[in-house]
Length: 426
Image (tube, rainbow, N blue to C red; front, side):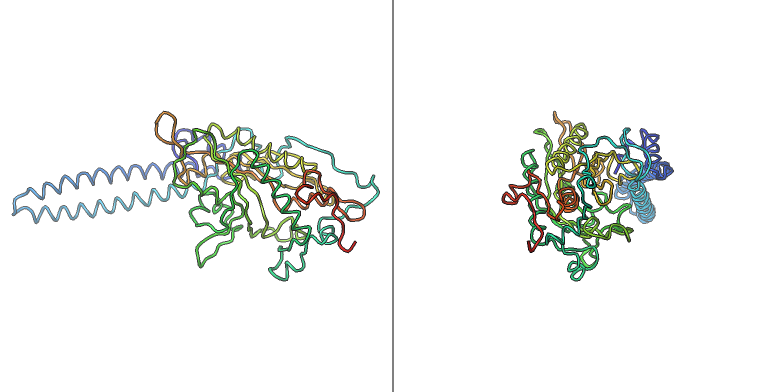
């Protein structure tokens, strides 16, 4: 959540951010009004409580014939103190609730608008001209079935729609890609983590996933826990209620996890294959750093994503995501979208978000300030380095006329030197 002190000091910047996001800016004034009343009521409560303590001493020192009357006055004062405390608490809770409805303040460079208003920052590689090569490309599911790599039919039989089995070379291909991504993360100073799939409500809320996107999250009511849609959630909670020492630089983690998403509101979208599914695997980078380092770390995450995409020999573009499509925690987000030949368009493979101090403030993660000058809230960032959806782009972009698929050179050592994946039964 945003810093209430910054909101008080510069409400116009927060209003402008809300407008850029296409969200309600009047909430800024509601927060300020309720929060001011909360502080006033808290001051009134503390003043009366101090008076109550003094009055208590007066009762103790009073003559016996006055004690009963004074005790009655003290009882009345105690009731007023209790009522003021409750009122101050209710106002503080309402101010906090309203404050949590405000998304992170977007960076000045972020384009205004919604999902289609992104800015293309870079295009890398050239899509193949399959017509010039003399054949019609197959989509990833047809290829996956030819190769014995994807089984949607049995996935639906076992678990329902939008579930699947990765079989044979499909399972090997995903593991190869994930291990290659993990090696890249290790080489760049990330600590590998295998994270929990279930988290407590305070962690899910703290990471910002129970605000406007709560309907996309699986909730286990009997346990009051949530299945994560990304290891970002667990990693955001990893240092909750801690004070970090960042004197030696940022803390960088690479979380390998199974991810779960309800895909609420996506009925009829991407129902074929494994583009939009309920369960997938992902390697997510996560960084804790000082607020001053956040933009540099954001560029670092994007560079690693681009390096991985380049190693997979995929044509892609980088977009600056528009404010209305950021999600609450992000102040800026870059997506890398690979070309999908059979769809004739780019599809997102990676995202990297600079969440500044938004998540860490909710989760109470701070750092020691150099020179012993107290503590301050850290910044957090995240970025995807590999995920199941990458198989879509790999299969389609590297297919051959007979349905076989060429393995990107950088991936071959992770598949025992395999250069071409052949259809089953050949």
